[in-house]
Length: 559
Image (cartoon, rainbow, N blue to C red; front, side, top):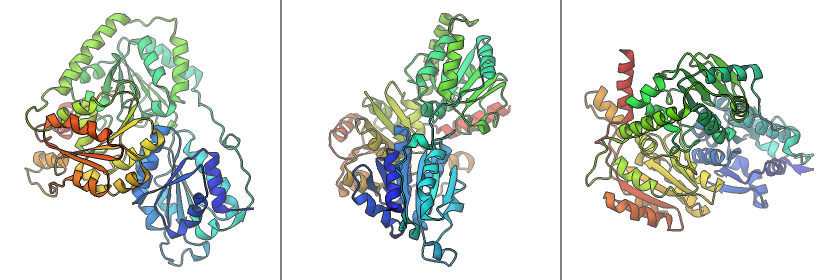
């Protein structure tokens, strides 16, 4: 017989969980007490529960396995909701554990009592309260099974305090006994129908989403693209799943829609193969993506197929498994297009596209988006991870940085979470300690989670944070300029020197005001041997926010 808390840690150990991200609370102390003696499962104690969820999310996206976050009852649990919601929208597998009042105190108004199961039901694939100690190992294993089945996502288990103190029989069962792993293969007839359609296409296009990343199907996407002579675009979550310096890869779909060459290529395609994407508003510029009638949509979640665009062929299956079958079927068969001629055309379009995308960058004595991103790119050598926040900082990062070989991008998409970037970068670093991890964030996003600098220093998680400090919310300010006659309200902040704040947390801090000083500051930050903050006095007022361009695109399409 062992305590339920010990059984919980035993299941986590069996699932090869290395870290639990949590803020201490009275209702979850029995679990903490077990982890105290644990060698394989380490507690990462944070300063806010939202950060715990974002860290678990960042860890999951880099590791490809579930991140685990733990919150105490009531506000501890509800503080995690924003982070869990972002993970849910981005198909990131989390195991969300929450403390709860004793079962004998439920519905009496006990301190920190809250129906967290009802709350998390809207942001997870599965949400359940353990009714007794004997059910906890089984239910926790169910959480892992649900999180890793079909389309990945969070699963939640609520743990009453008295349940954690019960003693139970615990059998150390290996994961393959309760969640067999395997790939969902698409219907063979549908795959062949899709192949025939692709082989008949003169101008096919491939759209790769985040599902390609989770399925580890990057090489299959590139091989199929090469066989067909088809350009590859990605969604926002798909950025980096294929190297953007590859001649077949054009870039991110939302950016492509904002250039004449990108729009021409997409609108002129006769067959589109969309793999592992859900055609969200952000990746289609609010569904203005000109998808052809001949759409082949491959996704492991049947609910996503045909949801936002009608399909010619819908295939329910794992991205890697389906693409492998397509490649096998296509090999040895000649597409109707002249492949070499098509590749030459793509090279021309690609050069035109990047030329359009990068034109108009402001030069001079100020640190502008392109000036900063050019310097950041110089440090993205070898295996590295780039984590962004939301807002213009995210948009400039995606616009100006090509994700080459070995560069992984993590960015919030589904929930637009301000403050995601920094804690997610800490989780990413724990998942891949051998890689350089750089967080690109705005002053608003960093300020929202700045207390986690203490977490990073205390646990020795050495990431470099680049703060694009424009003293406000520039994206929203441009909205107020364009749509509200320059009636600015709530969008200007004080000039906070985050490098000095970083030093107060015992991290490395340096402020940069001139473009020529960026390189040296980044070099010193990466060599500091501890968490580092480069606070860049940033000016993006001379560039039009992609939001304004998106509005222009809407009007153009409407005409």
